[in-house]
Amino acid sequence: MGEAGRSYRYRLAVLDELWTHGVHPTDHTRPELVHEFVSDLYRHQLRRLRLRLMRREFPRKDYAAQVITLRKRYRLISMPAAEWLEQES
Image (cartoon, rainbow, N blue to C red; front, side, top):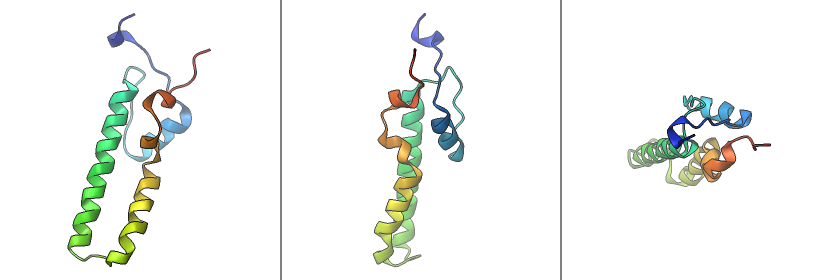
């Protein structure tokens, strides 16, 4: 079966976390594509946070803590995309 016809079984915990970001991969969506998309979402959120800092919506001393909080919300991107899948038996 070629790459286009391949089926992927995402881990349930990964799917649950992806859904919190509004990401709903199908069993034919390559995990690398989803990983790249979620990474883009994270970078977008980081840019928004930086803009908020520049507009002085919160004190600079709070910035690091907010980055850490954001990173925790996007912890999936620290995992390789291949680990998002169920292990084949």
